[in-house]
View 1: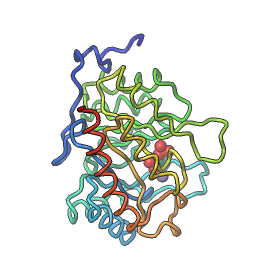
View 2: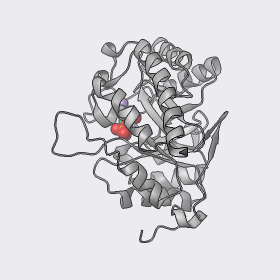
View 3: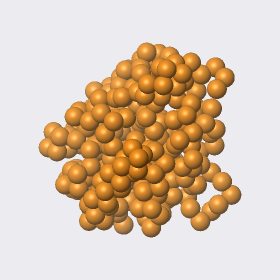
Length: 274
Ligand code: PEP
Ligand code: MN
């Protein structure tokens, strides 16, 4: 791929990037990130964190800065949201994944986050990419909703170029003519991204479909496609969620899904070793 240097698979002579976060090695262990779309208040986040922890998921997500279509919708709790996430980390020991939307916030948000998320809407915010590059923190780089593979991996290149090798790509669906789903989850991008880069690739079936009923089958499909992990929205009480209410899992359904995901990962690994 033209101009791709540090992110290219041939740059590492085929060796895949491994990223150590807490007790997990991304790229080696299959990692599930669960948690609500937004941090809304202490009780909501703590109950959701407990659900994520008890189900056996590996990291906790929650947005403190929410990039919303309407400026009148809930924008997130900002610093207070990060403080709540920190308390959940202390209580449940789960590494924290949270979105950063403004280059000026990267250094202080990094004090709370174990993994910084760059949202789909900010994939090509080049000053934000440079700043997370300087931070050295692991970064989840969501695919922009109108982005090609080349555009996406070049954004990863921006982060790597500033000296941060810890980049995880995350497919979260793209815009197509289909309106039944919120987005069209492009799972063929998983093996494609792994053909051109050495970076780990995650899949977010929650935003990728926007529909509760479609998330479970897309989890299995993502595992079959070679994903290194999943990002799944889980809320203690989805019908009351302040954002993305239609796609968040209840604690009970998430716990049963986690068991099936573990089995699917084992099956897929057996299959690929054959
Ligand atoms: C999110 O993860 O809550 C989010 C806003 O995702 P995306 O940037 O993929 O829309
Ligand atoms: Mn969301």
